[in-house]
Image 1 (spheres, rainbow, N blue to C red):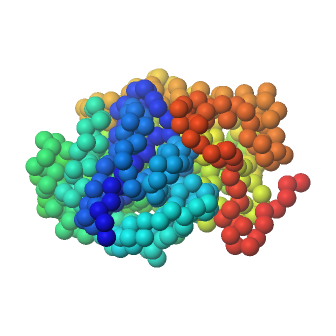
Image 2 (cartoon, rainbow, N blue to C red; image 1 turned 135 degrees about the vertical axis):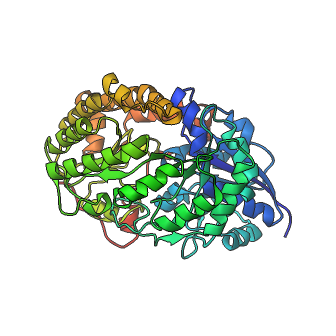
Image 3 (cartoon, one colour; image 1 turned 180 degrees about the vertical axis):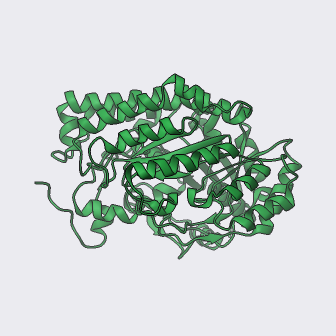
Length: 514
């Protein structure tokens, strides 16, 4: 097989930016799989040019280099950026390949813009595709292996791609690690809910942590596990064997069900600085939050008490919520969340709007059957900018009124000050950056704009109500502005997609709106 020139592009944002939040955090949002792919390609004998796009680079200068094969890893909100880059490379004769969340969620749409679209991927599949290395047009080829790979390249193997990426982060330089794939929980809105839980090698974890101690004076590790600590004793024993106390700080996403007080004490001893547990809803998902059948105010009190215990051990805790679920109705979910924030003033809230990302979750099939999924352009699908599911129990205007009221309560300056731990510098400044740039101002301004459009722009209202499939001009202008020079590389009609593609693939059709 000939030696190929391969460009690998990891996209962390959908547009150029100069925002403080993006400057601090975007480089730390780099994905592990593009780095693993780069290792695999080099092991197969190919030449690799690796780019992590954080919004501050000249993207065209970075990626428009002589290339035989372009790999892109992208979340859905960066799909149009990925599509435009793919078409530029295809014009130059390259074969283009998409992987990552968007490829898993919207393969049918991605196949219109890439020669290959990948689901679960391992090195043998990469080798097979590179040996074929053929254009597939107008419809790309969808390829996937049966399950997630059994192993992934560790930090030592990925270091040549990690180092230049975290060098772009001016304050916090978070090294991505992963100890497991899949999740044991079955939250029907989550992309990992149907992926079997699979721990990776604990010996590799120890080797990677020891390697890091020789590279960075006081590293910060961000665990990319969908739910860190399912095999708690094995994880913590590996960390304790490899790392002297206090030498590495850790950030992880975990569930409250795993955060007992003995576990918290052990996490504190081993340098865990931030945890991101999912609360999700006051009326469902009690297993994940360890609240059993408790709902409403009873669940608020249980979760608040638990998180206040967590905060005695861990300086930064982000509580994750999903707003607009079918179990939500009226003012109660929003008022209960405000009560929780008053009871747990040091917990930083993260609000996601109910979104159906194509094939990402079992719930999406039922939402598509009900005809409730709106074909919102991918550019706005990040769980915050826009909601692509018509709420079951809300009209748009009351929903956004309650959302804005909740955000004003959550992100008022007096509360943000209380969120700041007194002695922990990293969590303290992270709260400042999030509270003053991204969360408090950016998201609230965006939600206020959307609410105003629902009230004053008939085209927007008809689109979100399912009365029209024409993408509102205000959304088109925003995509065009964000893509800049890359807008002209985006094929016509790219901003429209079949919102019910997952359902149609089963032979069913969506219900018609009354």
